[in-house]
View 1 (cartoon, rainbow, N blue to C red):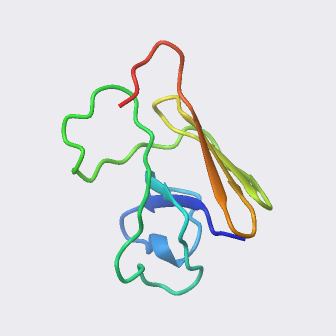
View 2 (view 1 turned 180 degrees about the vertical axis):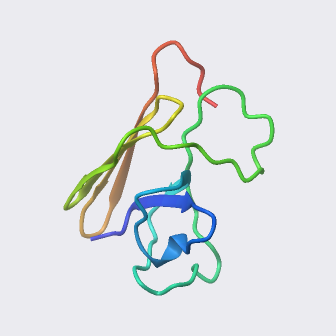
Length: 108
């Protein structure tokens, strides 16, 4: 299966060494190498669903978690502090993202 998952910022830890239950979301991407202890050579291409105005899209923006992540084989769900529900689904050769934004807010 493809390796969809959250990219996290948690000072003092190596977010690329595997899943972390703590830390702020810096994005969601399809490339995660479990246990290597190092970031991919050219980085990862990630998406980060944001709510509201994005003043500096090139900043190192992060979004806090809200609640506990839920996961089972092939499916991951998390909630951001901005009220966005993130769902990731994986198959052998493809991954799907679904973002559900809170009603009445603009998408950034």
